[in-house]
Amino acid sequence: MVDYEVHPTTPPEMAELATAPGIAYSLEFLAPMAPPAGATELRRSEYQPGLDLWAHGRLDPSERRPGVLFVHGGGWGAGSPCYHLRHAHQLAQRGWVTAIITYRLTASGATWPAPGEDVRAAIGWLRANAHGLGLDPGRLAVAGGSAGGHLSAMAALDPDAGVQAAVLWYPAVDLRSFAQVPEFAPMTDALLPGADHDALLAASPVGNVHAGAPPMLTFTGDVDPVTTLDDIAGFHEQLTDHGVRNELLVFKGRDHGFDFHPADWQACFDRMCAFLTSVLETSAPG
Image (cartoon, one colour):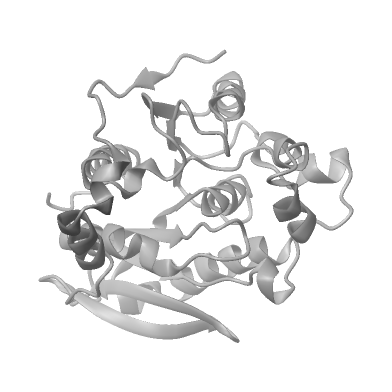
């Protein structure tokens, strides 16, 4: 088992979010925000037909800043880019170029590899439009949670995508595990209908680790029944065995989606900023 870092504080209870102040905070947390100083907002651009991208570029497009593409979760069949609105906004405050996207979902009949192709198309769109966004195309990361973590990890592990870092929240790293749990098997059945062991492995991050992969940071809870710590730790052990820089931060007593709590969200965000700054060697303030 790979060594990992345990988050040192006791996380607050998720039940706090059911209170009136918690609900008010959650609504504010997901609300649209004005572009921060130095940034401009690109609203709902189609990066390919029927699929949308929202970006924070630089007000001065001659800048060459690092960027992050966020990919939402939702079991490959649901979810919303609004999950990452605040990530994108606060990174833009620090001088980064950021983007969030929609992609083809299984609820609309999409199957693998369609969602993965969409993420790679969005990466290509950002690079093609780098000069208008103030983006350094050689300093681009992908980030996402759960199913979005799976898609982000697969993009990071694709040498043709050429991203420089990945940040993952409780990612689905081994689709074989999903297929063995009756509660979760319908998700993999929708994503890869009729897939056998080999096909599930080929579509999983654990089946695609290689020595040229970019650095990766993962956040997860130690009592997550959906994307288990055993699976995620095994993935990081493979990264270590292949000489890939990686960090795994485990939140004690936390379940799937723990970072929706404001305190845990902030802990993850701060660590993400430190990691990406270190990896991409940005001079952006903050």
